[in-house]
Length: 71
Image 1: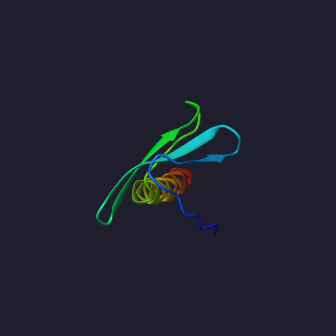
Image 2: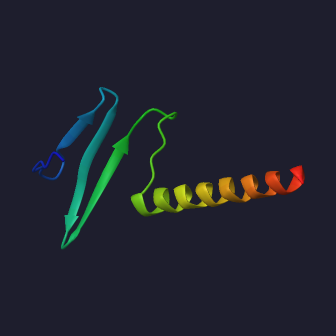
């Protein structure tokens, strides 16, 4: 993991086409802005993990249903 120090208004560039800007610092919260191409999905980690879990569950369910149809 790369750990960087940034001040309000400063930014990072990722992969030459994604810009992450520190917009605001208020107490223990930090507000960031992300500029990226429309084809780059951006998720909060907890949402991403939930989507991943639901996809795994759906795959498992479809696999079981497919096996039942064989018999």
